[in-house]
Image 1 (cartoon, protein in one colour):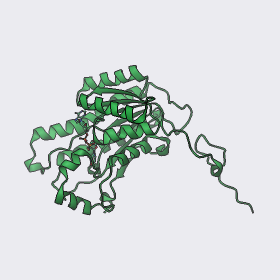
Image 2 (cartoon, protein in one colour):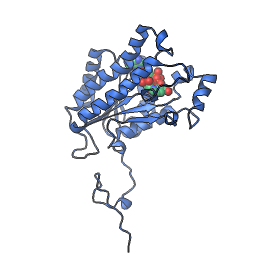
Image 3 (cartoon, helix red, strand yellow):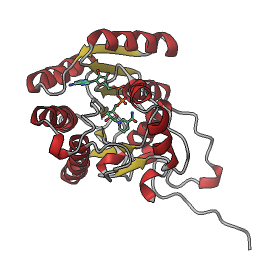
Image 4 (cartoon, protein in one colour):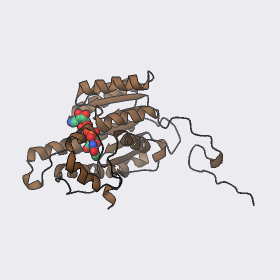
Length: 291
Ligand code: NAD
């Protein structure tokens, strides 16, 4: 009996033979992206990945305006004149500034399709008994409160807009990716404990789940990315010699991730390739947390 390939039944190609689909040439993503902490590291690499995969309008925001402007102009010259970039100063802990920034982006670009809440700091590497309260509050303020403040404004905006691709379950009104960490899933005592950072990142994972449950039925897709060790300028500075060696021994893949890999994982979560992911804490850690 002749083999009858199965039909897809789950997306816009519904009804076509899955084995006879044309190769995908269209872009994975459309529309407008808003990234916090986008001047450096994972945020900057994410801007590049989103633009490479179809986003044409990007708000590159950071507490460091000069660095955000530099990132915006190199991105435009590297990736071409069709990309529109809007560099803005934004401290994610400032409630009013967050609201004004979202409104500026919407005034300029009309909507926000992909929001990446990435801005964050490391927090001191000391155990609780030695941890100054001021440092605790600072880490929680940037790494957790900042993610909540920005995601709250993004959700408010996304609820007002229609999906760019109408009537397609794989295209939401908007999607939010919160950058947590593998320290949002586990604590490790290999190096020095980072208690305030670990508490904040566990909070980001919890916030992501709560918001995902609350807004999935209203067409907003919300997930977290939990990177392991990523070779950013900050990590190069922090993880040297023996410390770096010890941590890498605990990583089955035996290396740190590149920033570009994290940017591409964000693309997956933001795009129809990750369309059924809801409240996920996607761990991308080279295997660190599975042991
Ligand atoms: P980075 O220091 O290279 O970039 C962070 C950016 O955030 C900087 O440009 C900084 O100016 C900005 N920033 C800091 N405070 C801010 C504030 N209050 N408001 C707005 N912007 C602010 O760091 P990175 O390594 O790229 O980290 C980015 C995110 O990824 C962070 O949330 C971090 O916790 C997370 N992360 C990083 C790693 C890693 O190995 N590098 C691993 C797991 C998670």
